[in-house]
Image (cartoon, rainbow, N blue to C red):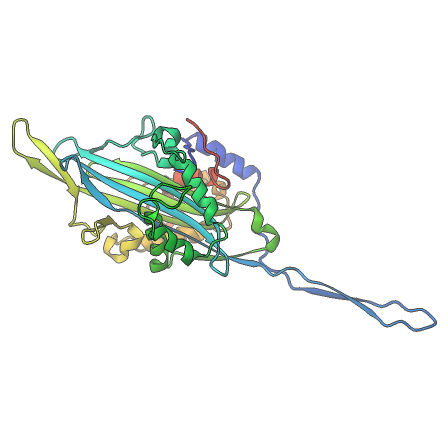
Length: 376
């Protein structure tokens, strides 16, 4: 989640209903310029025709992207594995100048409860296994920094980024492992790594927006998680909205796989590590890779293609729609294996379960625009 905002269903569905009531479509990206000539004539002297020209401003090209950095580390004598997922959503103009930036961090801490099951020790939302992000925690993160809480400093960094060139800003982040400057003391280099990943994997979606609408577009990011016996799933979405219409969307999931080792003794204890036999674990660089990043190695063998291909289809499907229309009740059905899926999934090119992605996209939409933290 982001912006300190957590929505639960059916409250999220109520939001979707609100979206449907103010549905808008994407304006035409460009309109041919028109020229009109007005001729005025008097008897003496004969006037020269006067030409007036009006031109529709050229559309503005924007690039939307998201990136992450997810290093892991063993804590407390290897009884906890902590993965810090730093996430960035960004909008650039044609000159690669930052138009908007949003950041968040989810600290996933897992510990073994027995030989086959892990549980989370992170702060989670009531009655869920959804880990609260640093933005979600707000004052409860309890950083007690002289420059303010984490979310306050993150907001200051986001505002600082606007108007900066991407390469220069990225270099600033990477050069400051222990803090940023006199006004931002939080660790920021992981966000630089996330921006590097965007360039490496070419996550950009390029869109054209009418010049008059550029100031009205709103960027949102969202993060959520769910827990399985030996895995944590972290969902990440970035979207650009004009009112309630999606102009661009970026979707990905990080799966943190765990290996549990029994330690002989009385009583028996257990240690935990990242499962390095899985493609998601980059043991050389001590970080977790997303489903999109590992590409064919995820080896899903789905009827509609690999996971990264289906995500691309989902992103394409979302553009130009409201979330209310994209995830309307008539568009969904329950599959015994994958849970909530698109009824017409094979045509859309998305046969994977989409409930978690739908829910985090709803949160992304609700939190798009200015940062206005909500206290729970």
